[in-house]
Length: 173
Image 1 (spheres, rainbow, N blue to C red):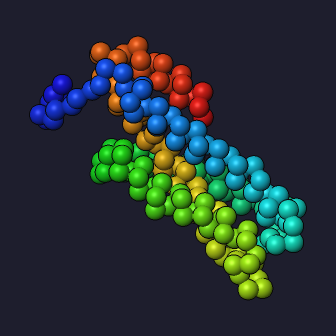
Image 2: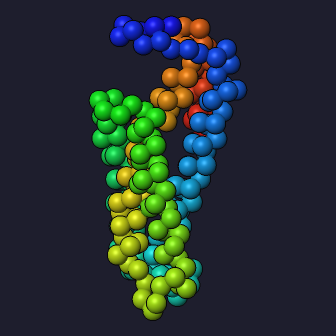
């Protein structure tokens, strides 16, 4: 299959088995990580899990969570522009996942370990992770994953499989 620009595309007969299943599994794991952090974030920030926490008030902790969620759901617009105009879906997902999202999750995990820090809680590090890296990375991934999965199918030969893919994609998330 060639497009108007002369680019050649090749498709496997069963893309669901060869590539899409990996995209679906990665999306399911990413959603578990995102919602796992989101669900427990306010309790962690207020100190309900122990004395090692930033000990924010409940209103401030909920605000951090809601601001992070808002950033997560606004970022896909920017990431879609980056993917469509500059980098493509694959590189955009790779950039947001490896350079922004995973470091954010790592900083959140590291901030919960008191033995890594001497005496005081790393509130600045945690705020950067919770209010910037983690939500921007999650939102950046969101813009391209479903599209990248659909691009594994030929638009005519696999039209029925594209519908099945989207049903499975939304089931996984």
